[in-house]
Image (tube, rainbow, N blue to C red):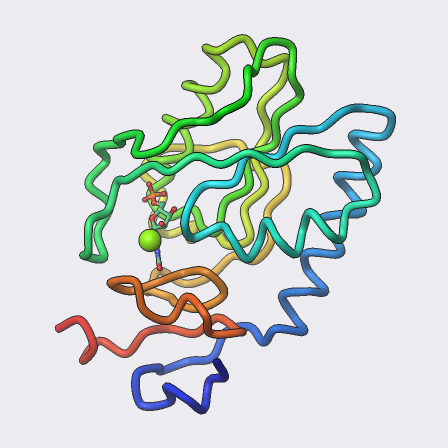
Length: 183
Ligand code: XMP
Ligand code: MG
């Protein structure tokens, strides 16, 4: 889906598909340098990170495995609750693994700081984070993100995997959702 297909639901257009792909390629080059010779496990956070995972994994010139987790801190609204529940757990054993969490967005940081601690407690050798988007003004806890894509304003954004009430995930780019949609 293109921006023009849902134009009246969007305010600012933040990133086109091409801009996103260029940023993912940039992050992939850093990841390749850091994990050369290693067997990497990418852990995608469902469902928002599906597009980032698909593009990042194909861009990486490294042998890797992919696994998925679903956690929930949100419900259908636009505010983080801080309460994280595991809806779907990993299939992989993390003992001794080099894990890279792949996320769409860091808002308050509550979900990822919980997730990192959870994965570390399972015996992973290392747990790092790759997030396409970050909202610095919304941070409630500091999260050390090794690979960060774009910093964005504190607004609710959709597209490229990011949803509002399960809509807009299939938008190619990323845009700010117009307040009238969720008011
Ligand atoms: P926290 O606040 O724990 O939240 O860092 C991270 C999760 O919240 C969702 N999220 C968003 N989803 N547009 C979305 O579609 C947004 O602007 C947004 N901000 C946070 C997202 O699922 C992320 O994993
Ligand atoms: Mg979501």
